[in-house]
Image 1 (tube, one colour):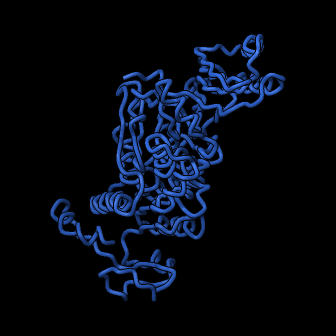
Image 2: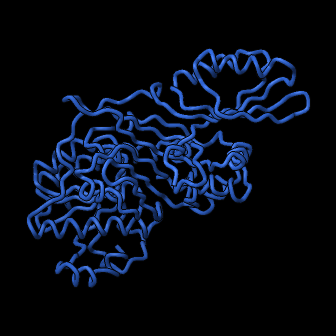
Image 3: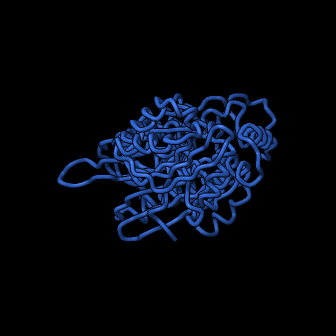
Length: 417
């Protein structure tokens, strides 16, 4: 609201359209929000706003599934463009809302739902509509990126970095949605849906969090030439012969080569790296969280919706097909593996034999003494997830293996700068 007040004249000069806030639905009209807006604008009846024939465009930022889902359906049915930042709703019911908006010939715009201030959805929907996008990899959660930055650059433990993120307002009191990958997973589902033209919902996304990442993992990654980042990856792994696309979408910690553009993304910033057949490699970078960055994305969509409404047009996702979701077991990746083992003759050979039995090839290995024990650190060649998991199960069964440390996927080696 504040940003709209600040930019109203600029928008009018550039577009010829004057935006006016007509009604705002809130839980309580008595709360002092510190805004220079006529108090009579506020009400508690969101449904009345949606049905008001004097209101042209509806903006929804209440979050959650209901009543947001019903309100958006009602607004679309009434022929009103909708702007939303509701990633939970779109990651679960986006397909039905996109179809409803297409049928009604109105906009459903949601730039703020994915990467804060970064203009990502519009380029995917418009500029790259004819581009065979193969892979999207990004940092789409500012909280986890801030935590990992503090661990990497400030030497903080995970608990210390999380506490600092909470004190700065980057993390909620209950940080589960961020640190366990649920927030990034919802965003990844939306990105995959738009990029591949296929229905992907939050439940299709494999996710792991960062809560087990240790300072030792961070230091080992640095020594090996990597940075640890929480990444979202969406890949189109098959499309053709009249079959629906096969799509793999996942969120997890990863070791990213230091020369890769994503490795230098710090603090609460987000970045998304796109690979396409024709355009090659693109990267979008910017503030991924915060009130004004998010407001900027909402306002951009609002201006777009107003311009389209005035011209009689709309931006559409198009008809989506049902994706075939590829199991995480079929993922092919390189892996970082840490083991603590008894430091005696024959142990390394027995460990190597387990890798060989499951067809997992070792690319590099380091050994560090720990008194009577030793720490072994492996980087594998690319292998299937199911083979890697079988290897880990057998390693846990070896008498000489005292502890199996974190296993972190290695990504980005195939995309050198």
